[in-house]
Length: 285
Image (cartoon, rainbow, N blue to C red):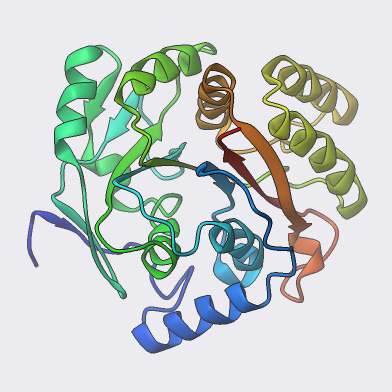
């Protein structure tokens, strides 16, 4: 194995490891997307889930269908670490990430610039990415839908101060070009009952689509108070999501909710303790 390449950690567990099976599944998911093809200006960011494709693949496909055929130079993949505990923001130093559909290069020059701008916050920490699924599951969709030639910048948020999204947005804004895409990988509510998830997630998506960070934070406080449970949360990549909302607000992007369901809508889960999945796109006015 090439030490300069990050190999899949969750192929077969979260998505098929066989190239033909994976291509067939993604093609089928994209073909099942029902929303209309609207004429919009350039899409600059998407919010998309990251559970196994059998659970959240249909909702992820809604976002990726909207950018199918698009051309981007860099794709900034952002999410909260799920497999390794650390402080700060973790980048990945590998030259490329491998998937059953092929390799995608990492733009390590952007890593260097980010670390130089904030060495106390941003680090190359490969172990944080090694077994994490949250960014990996986005790569096959990207390879299947975007035109070839893009690089990725994998960005994992660790355990940080509550205002880390302010610093992250300030770091990323000067590096973003017109031909770059932001991808926030996050599931929505975790472990409420089915009907409660629908209520919680509807409001969450409304705040995301209006880039309303204060409303999102107040919604989170109300949800925690109402359900009085450490097991129920609003989403699993809050810092990445808030970073996107700040950037969207400063650049004047518009947003649109595309699709929603939760694990209780699939034949693979019950309706007792579900996870919510939503897709949102951000585009230039």
